[in-house]
Length: 620
Image (tube, rainbow, N blue to C red; front, top):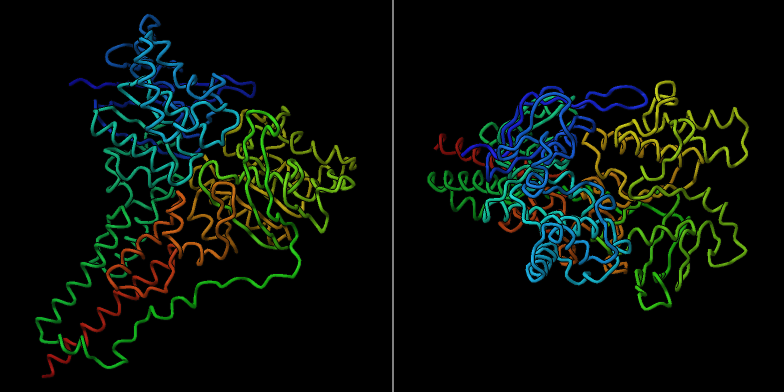
């Protein structure tokens, strides 16, 4: 069969006030019917630009794009091209056109001229696919960012395209929602033959792809099966990317134990490989007549290096008596007192102590973003109590302007906070409103820009909206940092960023703690929170349901899954090994380093025991 999409020598140049920007530089690519292709690359590599050429949202500056033989330059075939290739974007608010969810999903089929009964059938089916049936009569603007994204996916599914293009479409979803969206794409691909093209920064989303295409500076740098490409960790890092933690773990273990396979992609594959190694050791020992020694050996032989692993996991930090800010049994209603009243928060209790990094996790629509807007008085509690620096925010005498200078809030899509033409002016806006001197404003802007990795001299006079998505996000954060808050609250700060930009941002965020800033972070990236947070709060259906250290929270994996969340891949590896009694039940593993230490200790123990048995056999 001919390719469903064929691209030849594709170039694309954006014309901006700051000058021409060449986004694509000679792309040659064919996508076969029924193929599952994943595009990855750093921010600004050209992924989104390439994706928008697949259904003629952009036209080539040079070169050609064909969809089922139709040239995208020919406007006579535009309807057929866009009926063939459906696209879901990263920002859901840019795609929603109706005021009721089911009407928005029906918009595409209606424009295809389908019968009313068929439109209803497709709307019902697509909403069911993304688990949004209960919200069909809700107003989209009252939904969370992740819920809005599901609606956008449903709207494209309702058109039943032959090719589904997902441009960072899972970036704002919780782990369960991300898995459900990927399962939908996988089922459409395998069961109905829909061609999938997905652009993503989540490397683990690429493991089931037929082909992985890595872009760099507008060119195809690498392409091939994920199992092959994810072994090239150094090459990926040079391209500002990462391999999934599972691939990094497999290669780390392979370096220590050459017989261990290096090309593994899933937690279960890691567990199976470890189990296989251990079973081979047992079989060898049984053949050598050491079965009784294995079952009844002395206590010294039974002692395992991993028995002390738990001591390396940080315990709850010693906390001062008084929290810096707190929510106690807070409830909040949207559109209170109207027929559309919704209780967004039911019973939220959170305490944040000076110098901490506190993480908030929860499924999409759980109330996380609503909760943090109480920290600086953007929302008022309808029930319960909010305290900031010992002040009750329900007290009308409290000066909220002072509170908001103390508690800085970075929203879920911080790019929407930008409005000035030049970067320096946008960051300076807050300090200028505080009436600071010109010299102090300049000093604050410079400190804030350097704190987020934007060199002052290079970026202060740049056009704000000519920056990449990751750079705009750092400008938004710098604008809040310039106010020099004591507490910084970040809502999904790394969503949509490439791995290197995410690492850099997390490094800058950690540097802020060393400067005395207390941090509260909402994220769906479990690995990220596991590595940086002192304590975690889990929110579900408007309630605080769990609180504790990362070890305590991720140690309750079944409880997390019961409320639609997931655990880090490394925790899943450990769970599979515990099920085979290869790791002690009380060991909690949630970081790459912990998993490597635990498994290496296990394999080393088995190897050492087998070697001692071999030596004993030789002596006898």
